[in-house]
Image 1: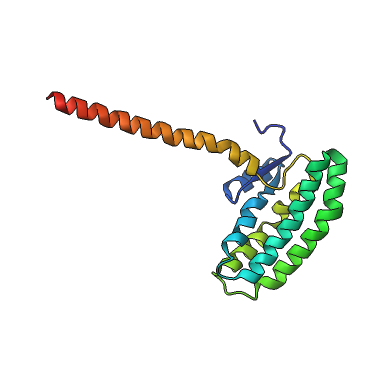
Image 2: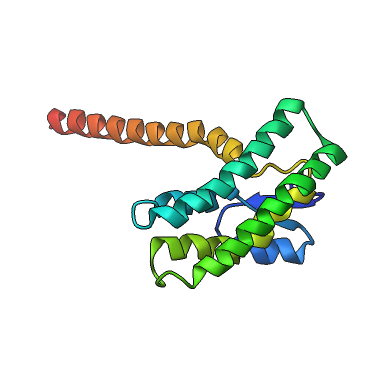
Length: 171
């Protein structure tokens, strides 16, 4: 139930954006998805990819500190705004300058474009203490369900095939 939601963290799927805006819900983009773009561009263009990953390393160091200290609420928001916002400012500034240095269609251009296009959503978690930097925990929670679904589909297909063989053998 999204009735009382103030923020919603999502992946790159754009279908949510219009609905979230219409309902006054802050759209938070998942930084793991943006980080993955830089990870996937390393083979093609290692230096700028590693710089992007370096910015994410710094952001995640602050998040680990917040978690280790058990910070919540206003204190968590203050730490994020004081330590992570300047990292984001430098990250976006670097990405903006770097973007035009690479051919359109290259992996690093895609990573930089993904970051720049979604920067507002990627940074939204800074002001929302309950919002994580990424939705990895949520996605990990879904994995058993997806694996279970695949297993049940396999069992259904296998059982159907066995029934079919037995039925055919009867004739």
